[in-house]
Image (spheres, rainbow, N blue to C red):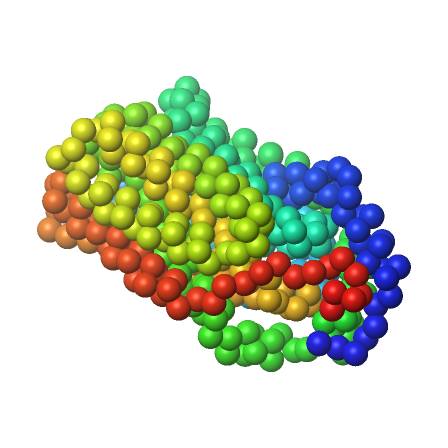
Length: 437
């Protein structure tokens, strides 16, 4: 903590700026970017059959090409966190949205799976700003008493994008071809970039003063490698990140890519029925993020809810393994419940922000998101390769083989849940006055 004194006038200015509807408007604009990038992220999973036909790629190669999104997304987090700490949201998020749009254009304009992987990589680079950007903006423009629910609302906006990309995307692709939705994504991405630039303000001066109190020196910024090394030594941060990665797997692996295929093989649902059922994961995730974030703010505690969500989601994911011998309607209900309990994963970012200094909050949030999003780089293609072991190049996995791929997700979730037990609880900080520090 710095010796820099912040007078009560700064806190009064902060409280006034955080009141009313302006922060919610800023949040909505930044949230639209997250909504959009999530739509673009899950589109290949919905359009998988058309893409495989167009490219002639196998399931394993398809999974590897699509995981390029996460290969770009995950490492970029550390740079994005530093950029947000230095420059705020507007100067980082607006160019990033344009980059996602270009990635969508590259993806839609080719039949080559390698080129699609390149477009996917570009999408991942731009998208790496979306969630961190809206959460960072919320930590600036909302009081700590709302820091629990706001990341949950951000999750809700993103997963609404994923929900929109499931069943409606299938209808659009059937009517206009699989490329048309991606070309629409290109136009929408450029529009969101323009909105971010003109409607999201620069970081306010009163927040700069609060950052100085935490030790921030704008004239002598700490080198990025030094900051990364300091962050990487935080044991609690590692525990939060690893547990959050495990808890997020139903979204990043089942919802994003393999859920439709799993349901078709295990339950016999049509592609439309499977995509509609998979949508329940995202709807549940959105509702769970808001509910558990609100409860965390009301209780002033995080871990008990976070741990409960980890245990419940792992149990539910295990029950879904019985999809081929239980009623399909029950599996569909379980998918919604899985999404809801997984929504508690947003608390990983809340706990991170609770104890982070204002000037390296972006970097610590980025570190957690780096770990959370790096795991799918390994898990997405691994699920596909495991499910396709021993399958002919033009064949489909059997129920048992598909289940083997899915079991990897459950195993990793169990490991993440065990790690959760070792996390320390956190509480929201007090930003009400100088005396609160």
